[in-house]
Length: 125
Image (cartoon, rainbow, N blue to C red; front, side, top):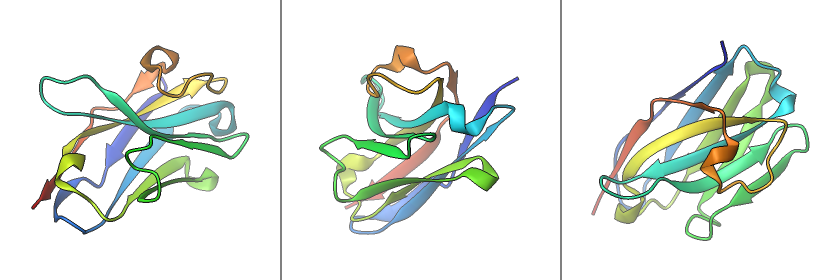
């Protein structure tokens, strides 16, 4: 079965950095797009960034553009989300998700078939 699993969350002060990792197993990595989403309690899950592995194409929400970088290590079936200049409003549960066959609208949750359990990111002011 295809599985994705996040790691790397934690507590950091505003202005600090964290790197999240998403390991995907039992899939042909190049055939997928991997997205990062975040969700605060009581709010909707929102897209943060996405990478189409096969096309090496990346997408970013405006709220993180210039601060977050998504990248992949194909040899390790791993996607990273490097988060710099973190703000308290970045505090959320971060999820990664895999979409087979690429992506049409990276913000559309329904396009992703496989989801991880999430990793908490907390940014203190």
